[in-house]
Length: 326
Image (cartoon, rainbow, N blue to C red; front, side, top):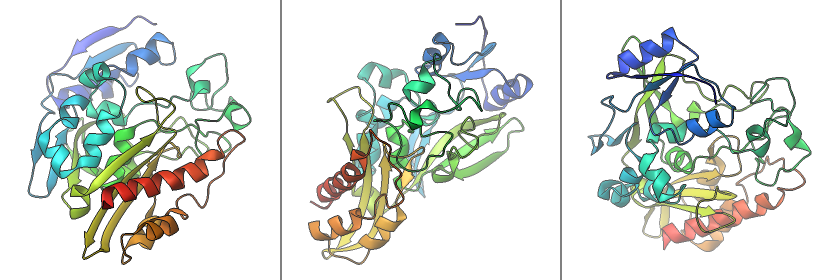
C-alpha cells in the first residue's frame, strides 16, 4: 500500500475542486472497496479526500419519487420503512449485499462505483486490460465461471458486482452528479456504466471533477410491486451468479407495466426491455413469465465455464416474476 495524504472536506464544490486539482486523488466515504484495492496495490492514490462530512445524505419521498443521498449507508437505506414499503426491490438488493458490518460502512454512491471482483483483475500476477490497457484478458479462455455472458468484448468479460445497481436500473433510477463549478446534471443509471468495448478501464461516464450527489427513483406502481432475487453459491456474503430485479403493475390479472433487469450476467447492470415488452398486455401467469424469460439473454456469448448462466438467468427471472405477482 502506497503512502498518501488525507484531507477532510466539507462541501461538494470543495471536494470536486480538490479532485480536479489532483486527478490521481480518490474520494473516500466508507472505504470498503477502495482500501481493499489500495492494500492489494491495485490502485495507488497520493491523496485521499474524505467526503463523509458533505451534505449528501437523506432518504425522502419527493413529489416525483424517492431521493437517496449518495452518502447514506447501505444498511440505513435497506432498512428504511419508506424504501422497504414503496421500493422493495431496492431494500432487498441492499440487504442481500455484503455483510452487516460492510453495509453499516459502505455508502450508496460507493456501492455504485465499486469495481469488479473478477479474479484476474484482482490478482496482479495476471494481465488485465481493465487494470493495464492492452495487456490482455486471460478470462476469455481461463476461469470464467463467475463472469459475464452479455455485454463483453474480446478485451473484457468482467461482471459488474453491484446488487443495488441492478434494482435501481430496473426502476429507472437517475443519478444526480455535481461538478467543481457547482453545476449538476442528471444521468440515467442505465447510461452511467460503460460497456468495456476496447476501453475496459473506462467504467462510468463520471467526469474527474464530478461526484455522485444523490440517487433519484421515480414513483410508480411497478416500483411498489417489485422484487429482487439473488442466486449465489452460498447463503450470505457472496456475489450473484445471477440475479433478477423485477417490477409489475398488474390490474385485473393483466400486466399494465413491467420492469426487468439482470445481475451477474453482464459487464454492467443489464436491463431487459425485450422481456418487458413481452410481458405488457399479457396475463400475469407462469406461462407468460416463461415465454418472456426465454428472451432474457438472446445475445449471450457464454464461455466454457459459465454456459449454465443462460438457463439460470431465465429460471431466476421466472421465479422473481412469480414472487412479485403472487
